[in-house]
Image (cartoon, rainbow, N blue to C red):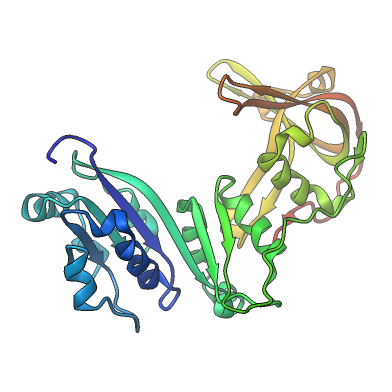
Length: 320
């Protein structure tokens, strides 16, 4: 029990009343956790849902409450390890804390970050997102599993998926509802990905970029035509080329370059020392390289033709 990296830590992120405690209750009721010697719950906030004493006793769970993120430190965790010798740690974060303030704290050598789960109440998501965008960007960035609960037919599943994917390409997004007629939608595309030559409309770049990260096999060896930048840069005495556009997931502070590696003669017109880039119509073929485990090792586009053109007033890719 005291060996290195044998205590999984589960982080649960989300605003108040997003369902974090309900998920922890489900975890504790799971046979695997019920048989554990000690499930340590670090509670950053208390909502309407409470964990009853009977379940705590049955699942051998202990609760430690913290009032602020400033209380958290490696030394604090080490003291909890010495006191409880937990089999697992379930961390329910306060929704108003900055995730970076606690997610980046080094864990004791016995603990390891096993899973980061984000919870979102779909009923209040639209309102909160407009006024608290930074909270959701925080949640989307750090979680590999994001659960939208209390969904209904008005939940904009496709828009939400695209919004999250641009912040965290690896996030698995699940939509849940207690309504009997609710259906979790398959991701839709605004274009036909089966075409031999895919000529993207200006507003479809974001949907294509996200889908390419999720399903690179759809685009391997496919010819693409779209408007965007060809770019160059020199770093560590090595020249890098790429194509893409700038995207905004939730707010201006989260602008990022949505691009892939580029090859081809078209880049020779750029000065990498000046990190030069040019806007125009790009025609090229996508190439995927796979590793021995079937994962994408490299994703690139060989640019066959580039036609410089006047840049539109707004070239940003929007996801919300």
